[in-house]
Amino acid sequence: MLAAYSQRGLRWVVDYDCERPRNLVVYQSESVQLDSFTSRESGFWNVHICYSNQVSLRNLDVQNSAGPSTDGINIDSSQQVRVEGCTVFFNDDNICVKAGRGAEAQLLAKTVRDITIRHCTPAERFRHHAGQ
Image (cartoon, rainbow, N blue to C red; front, side, top):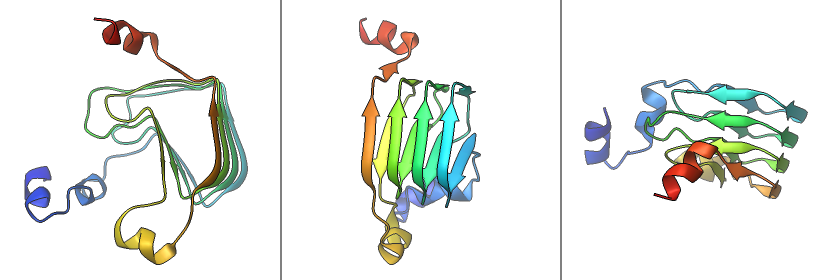
């Protein structure tokens, strides 16, 4: 699918059309706390925070395989999100902050603001490979 979509300038659409699952999606939610769990081997993004407010992610262990675009934590068009003390390792983005993508993002005009990321570390596996 990727080759056909890339030729038409639709590289990112394939991620949705092939319906790769995310392990956890917090969608249009408020006052959510995610604390002290492990999330691994998602088909797409592992933890996706989308169109949400006042979300706290603390002490998560988030890791994945080498699949395409298997991000760790994606904070998308959300406000007042805190990510603290998490261990994250991915082949693409460990922690990503974005305000949507494409026509939907322009139409909805949802912003991303007041994001705090602190005391997070790459997984031991990442530190090992980075030093080679």
